Picture (cartoon, rainbow, N blue to C red):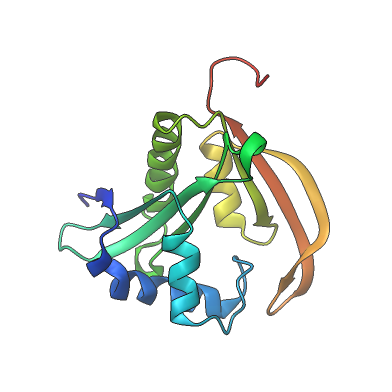
Length: 169
């Protein structure tokens, strides 16, 4: 399936919200309040990000997205953070990997030196496999740090990848 990854445009919002809403409502992979409003989701995904990209299939349907932003302020702003969503109907087709690879290249172009995922839910096995296949390492486990909607408190992982040659400074 030909896939185009391009910058988000305001006209993409209804389709992007249609992808985000069921994921946020499920409360299984993102820490957002499952009762998040559409307006708050837009602020969190789009307005608070340095870059937002969307993946569009051959038919022009939006099938995925990622955001990219600094993970911290000022002296930690050289570390990127990203979030990804793939349409349920489009999962297991490599779209998450394509989005991850694209985000790593974009982060390098923007001058980030590392990318860190702060709260990877341990029960999100598909996500964990994807991030590890794309070069991320688990650097920490936070016991019970995520309140899963169905399973209760589960571990969350911190994952990291250097974006520069050689070891991080």
